[in-house]
Image 1 (cartoon, rainbow, N blue to C red):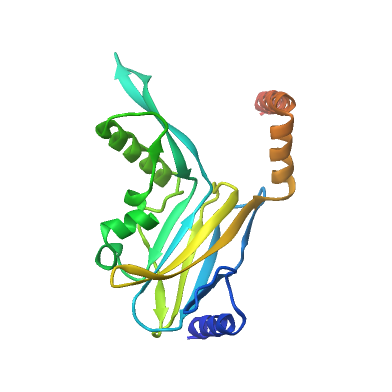
Image 2: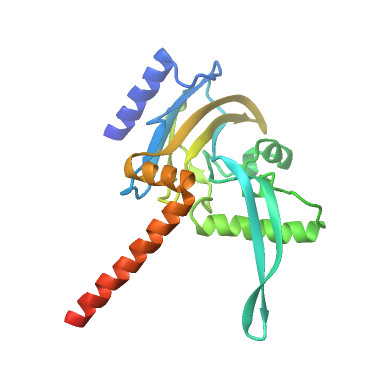
Length: 249
């Protein structure tokens, strides 16, 4: 009950003061925080999204998309007992992180066209190869890419659950793993009625490295050769110290 009251107070505060900068008249929502700070002790983070509907009815869908980038998928072929590099395919516009949450399963409340238009579900992601391939090859490498992202925890395998508190208030939690990439994340909140998006909002969630983690990353980008040399020397020193400790034991 305490959590329900807390969510109710937050949602009422949103209705009174506003939330996302891009805001629809009958849909208001916000995040518990808009910055995820990655430090050397970062182990992941949960972000609460909550909001309210002015009108009852319909469903709410939340889509969180990380920075889009190029990703190359390489196949491996087993030859005489040895795995060797095979064909590869590079996709453009690949979300570095992707998660969807909904009040109900996407199938009954959307159409294939709607899911394709708003990229609802991993099957609807617009992953385009940079070169021309036949559809069977694209489907094979696309499946491998999505599977890799899922194993890394960057594409949750299941659609998250949005809880409704009464007829108008809703909330959900988006979990980010420890290996979440930094950058701006787009958070979309959609209200779906009769297989149509009738209201939508968008906001930005920033994932950023701070402190020592940020300094090391900046140094590695600016002084790659020195960073590599330092890492090599550190590894040699660690091995030498471990060898001395082993001899004394």
